[in-house]
Length: 110
Image 1 (tube, helix red, strand yellow):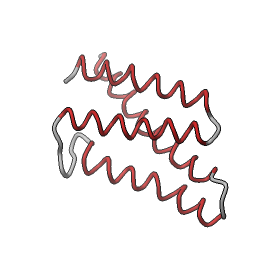
Image 2 (cartoon, one colour):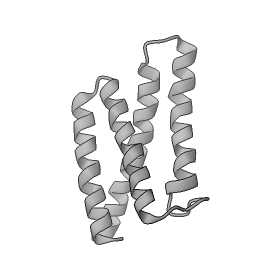
Image 3 (cartoon, rainbow, N blue to C red):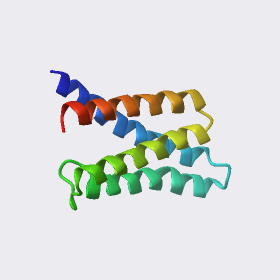
Image 4 (cartoon, rainbow, N blue to C red):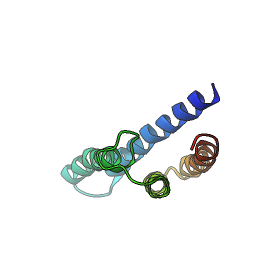
């Protein structure tokens, strides 16, 4: 049961990362068309990257340590995107959840 909860939280972290990139793009202080492109494009690019290298059924699977580093990079950038969008408390909470979840996930499962 614990593994199901860990997997669910991990999936929710992935969705939150995509939402953070979307939010960041739309909160940029620039022309509307750039905000639209970045707000839609950045989560799409991250999702494609995730599917190619990080997902359990990745197109180009990587070793476990590389996968963990890539996950940390994506989640760290998502926290930075939240922070840069003005949601500093949410960024800190998200980063804390990511750290705890990754420790639990890799210690218990992998």
